[in-house]
Length: 374
Image (cartoon, rainbow, N blue to C red):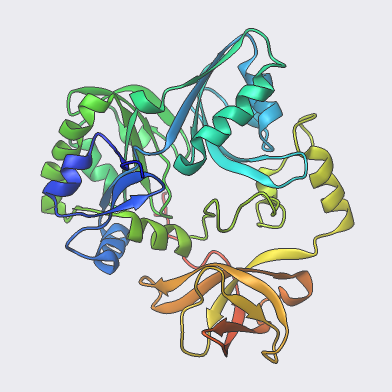
């Protein structure tokens, strides 16, 4: 069995006491000595620092990068200006999801695409095949030459501002700035994240990752900053109802079923999966992703069966479930028939052979309060 790969920040995980696990072929910390719940709550109230260097990065340049990306993804990337980030699923002809990704427009004819680590090779092969229809356009996998840190939480801007002369307030949500000096290293900084909080993702050369990490920890510690592992990263994204590939998204489910309608364009022209998605939209959904709150005792784990209101007939399945530290509730995301998707609908979850009562609730479970201005 192959040894798991190590990110440029592996020694930092060891130094700070991270509990290392094999995560999709990568040696990454699931938690630090503070523990998952404390890491979660600190990110919500102060700030957390994450290593996300396992993510994949592709650079697209050449003759027609926009046309190529538009063909690959379902959202309308063409509406993005230079310096903007746009989220989108990427679909098979069936409408099922290949992956979900973020496009970063670096220039008039230059994009960076960030994909999920576990899907990197699959995505690269899929997109390379599509690229054959766009002569003169290039797709380069820069994942091995790129480190990525995420600084998330209400104090993220305050902390990062101590290490850069760039006015971070000038970077709007889902926008980026290239050539930003952070702790003396040249980086790309985007106001993005996977926690439901304000924050930044910092892309750098691998050799700069450790100095940047240490500089952020040094200035952030007095403000309560702590390193955060995969466990809290998952509970944070789950509370904010951000989808995870392999759970909420996969080749069998479409973005429409996952509730990602706002990221699906039917106006931008042809792309892979458009016909299937349009047909599904016109016909109407049979299943959809809903939020559920447990009434009875128990946590609705991934793969658990969802039963009808009487607790007898299987109607769907849980994609993600957890105790939610911010809300102090046991919640889940689940696919159920549209007829059972209304807010307040009673359902049951099969927990170790016992039907446990639950109810359909609104998503997202958690939404940060944005500061008012003026």
